[in-house]
Image (cartoon, rainbow, N blue to C red):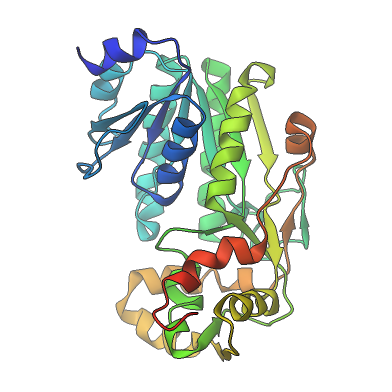
Length: 320
């Protein structure tokens, strides 16, 4: 029995996770499967995991929309968890967005897209509400604004889409936490990204993935296009440092990220050049307010900061 017939012959609600091997993709696969959904996990490279309960794997490129739609002609929800090369968004975001729109529209699915705070520009205000204006004064802001505009325009051609905007991820690998903040934790050092007293928006991935499930379960109550903010965890550098000390049971040294040194190395690293342009996120206080999300789901519970950071300390060989 092929994948398409498997999906069509079951009564469970179904979700296609595009980019299932990424940070949010993995979280979404686990959360939807745990909630009893049938999950089709798409990834460009083969998965080394065995299919779990309600989980099937689809190996192909997200741009191969013909193959994806042949395998999954109908699905209830599509999760856009594809994460193109950060240094090539200018060339990769448009075709990826176009492919995701085609897949969701043709399969008559609700498209769910993770948003971020880049849209608000380098001078983003301290409180980011769902009606806060976008400002395209950085390349990444302009690219994300254009992407979301494409999604909104596609709803005039039959797409149904909801964007869930969240802060920086906590959990998994490839985040600011494992690449910088806790990188030297085994040596008793916490790297601080900016001033200690600047609030920063965070999203613990298991919590965010469960929010995706809850919103998907209310998909019949959503308009054709909606943008909602997930408040997540707002924490300063001092808060993060204190939580890591609490978890490790010892005093930790604070060390500032060497931005000037990074600027010198960035001449030879496109990734570092892209990262340095986002330094403002650690210099300007910001937090997300999510009235629309709370109106849809009711009170939103969020893991505590220590609970969210527990995995980073657990990985440290010298932690207690």
